[in-house]
Length: 244
Length: 139
Image (cartoon, each protein chain N blue to C red):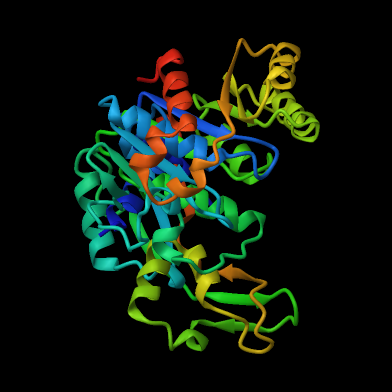
């Protein structure tokens, strides 16, 4: 039995300049916030950006963006939902709404492969992938199917987060996934623990994103999110990384 | 009509198996259509033929077969088929058509109600056999 879908993934993503997985081994460190705010910054700078939310159990990029899930349109494939001009979104939410999606590992892989094989990203230049926590199917499948993918790895300065994320960095190195920078998120005083992690892991750059209480109010309001302190810090990071 | 994207995947997979051999080396491809995804065979066939026209593959090499969906409960061991999902609404069927795994959002084991089950057969589009002959055997 041959699964034909893998043969077409490269073709589906061929027009996209950079594929970036916003990743962390730890939950609750702000992966979705970083993905969405970075995409908003890139979109505001005139780039055509797609967000692929691969968190099957906890898809939430649509909540940050204030997008109501609806079945996608078809055009020789399925079209990501248009958030606004130059910004689009695909996830499981258009299919399942706010229902839970209890999947086992092989089914997660099947769902990822299906979304990669049938989503038509059109003129999208940058694909930002909101990853679930960990280094399971989502990371392993993407590393195999999209070998040019790079990862921006997110950690808070907390010791537990840094320790768990260090394991992810080690695995990413073995998977040959480039890590151009770490993002120290929810920084209250200093980001030194994440900077030290970057030095140990051989990652050149760390960006500090402040803990920003206004983010909670910005959920569902992209303009507010983009103008928040966290949004501004991520916009600067996107510029310095050459994504804009 | 996202059948086009899946037909495209089948053709790309066949082309990858063919490698740098002449298209005439491709002698037969059997495509299995799982019941759960409810692929429109007419659209799928039209898409295949249209995409194939650019690839110079021999005519009539693709055969379509269907496979019934079978679910198996991990909790109580019950096996069931799509007849047990007769009350799915049109939007839910459409969601499953696009992404078969979304069935897990809508269907439960008809025996024990568990959400923990596997789709054992009949998911979506796959290639069950692909026959490529060696270069010297080609036209």
